Image (cartoon, rainbow, N blue to C red):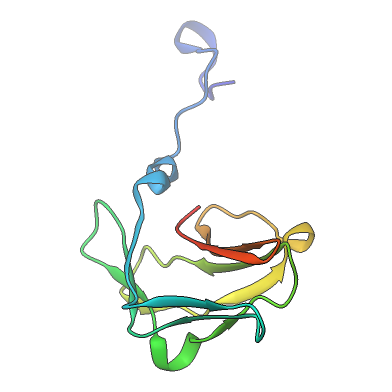
Length: 121
């Protein structure tokens, strides 16, 4: 319910500004490759996360984060976006059952069976 009471009361709550998160875009990364035998998702250049409504850019650094190890089917790789500054983001990998959703947390890769999928979710 809305916060107002009395004549100004409303049945709805204000929409949080973080709902614009669906507009975040993952771009770059050069060439992405999946090696099932080594369970490695690699990329050849920095990947960039564009955040609408800000001048800030977040990056997943090739030199630090490639390859991403997705050892088991169901593993997800995620980042916590920094909307307050430009930042280099560490990638965290967990089993999908252990993934905890958060407002600025986005899955960037997911292993399904023997395949790996890349993209912001």
